[in-house]
Image (tube, rainbow, N blue to C red; front, side, top):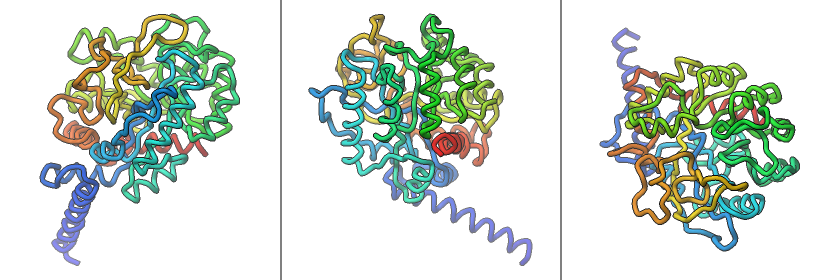
Length: 401
C-alpha cells in the first residue's frame, strides 16, 4: 500500500471512530451530535468515566419511604459517566444510624429497580455495563457510623451490595474508627476498631475510602491494609481557587502533597472534587496540579456533587452534638458547602451542587465538559481514560478480588 493509502486508511478509521462516538452519544440521549466536539464525543464513548463520590438523596427513615422518584438513569446518560459511586451518609439525622443505613439501602434498591440500573459488584460488572451502553452504580457509604462497633456488620453490608466503604465522615461514629481531619485529633489516628474494619474489608473484597482521614489516620490505615485504597474526594491544599471565603472554609478538607504521595505510594488514588474551581478549565488545572505531584496513574475524579435532584429537608445535628456541618438539604449529605446552600426548601440548586450543573453556564453534561477541558489543558486521550475512570477501576478490581 502506498504512503498516501496508509494515510487515507488512518484518516478513514479515525473519522469512523469519531462518528461512532457521536452516534453513541446521540443514542444515549445525551446531547445532539452538533453540540459535541467529535474528539470529546469519541473519548467519552470509549472511556469508562467514573465519579468516585456522588451523593444520591434517598430516604433514611420509615416515614420518608419510599421517597420521590429520581431520574438517575437520565442524569447519568446526560453526564456521559459510565458509573458513579452512589454515596449516602448516615450521620446527619437523629436516630439510629444502623436503621438509617438499612432504610437507605432499601430505598436505593427501589430507585435502581425503577431506573433499570444494577449495582456493579466487581470491575467486570462495570466493564460489562459500559460495553452495553448501560449506566451502573457502585454502592458506597460515607462513614462507618452504622457499624456501631459491630465489625460483623461489614459482612452484612457486603451482602447487601456495598463495595466502597468510607471509614469516616464529619462527625465521629459512636465507636470511632479514626481521627477526622476537620475535628480535633483525639484517637491517635486509626483506632483498634478502625483497624478491624479495614481488615474485614480486605478479607471480603471491599474498597476502603480514606476521605476525611487526617494524616496520622491515613498512615496507620495504609500500614494495615493489604489492598490499595482511595481518597475519593478532596483537592491539594495548594489549589485554593479565586474565592477567599470558600478557600477558608474548604482549606481543612484539602490534603497536603505529602499525604497524597503517601496514598499513591501504597498504590492508591486520590479523587479531585469540583470545589474551588469556577470553570471546567479550573478543574482540569486542579487535576493537573495533582498529577504533577503523584503521577497520572494515581488521580481520579470524585465530584462530591449530587447527580439527581436534592431532597429538601431539615437535618438534625450529627450524633454526639456539635454544629450541623451538613449541606444541601438532602438526607444523604453532600460534603462541605456555604451556609446558604443548606436552606431547606430551596427553589434553585446552587451552582456546584448538581453534577450536571457543576459550573455556571455549563452547556453539556459533566464528563463531556471535563474531557473538553482536559484536552484543552494538554491531557492526552490515554491520560483522560486513566483519570476519568481507569485508575479507580484498577484499584476497585484489586480491592474486590
